[in-house]
Length: 224
Image (tube, rainbow, N blue to C red; front, side, top):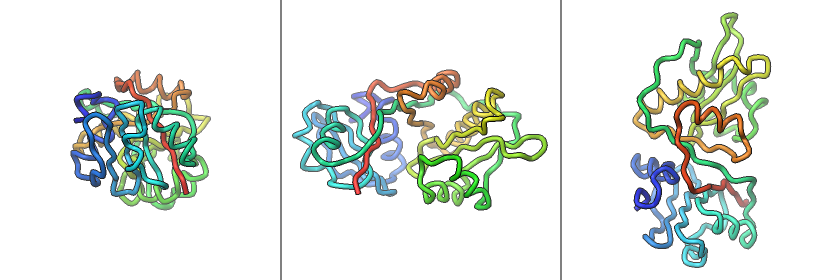
């Protein structure tokens, strides 16, 4: 159903369904669908600008990823959800990148504080989950200093990409994301990431690495 609309814009939901990572809570070919990820978040795909048809099935609280501006605005203005700016969904459909020359390896729990002090978009539990699953990676300098890190969020997207200021513009971020692309392909997951529409540096990196962008914007919103 989702592929018939835009396989790029809904690649995150398609990947979750393909890997059986949750349950389908609502589905209508004309209105949209709601898929509950086992990590708790609700994927909401609204195919129509009319939120009324899907409204009875929208959760009244929690974390939601909403594909569709009108439904996201309705949830924020009428239901009390909070959120920031929209994101683009970028998807990699190319071949497995060549191995990078940088020293990249999984980070253990001893790096948790280092990461949380420099990346506050994810919760500590999300970052710890990545560490425990071997899905948080660091790039090290020849002298052994950690130059930057990246990993997979709990729901499966690539992210957390952070390069320390003194190591920027040296290809560290590109090497880290290439490593994630290789891991995702090896693990038979769809490589995708969410990028804020104002993040020009990340947008440039995605396009340089050959990721493709979906037409439908998505919003990460939440309500306690």
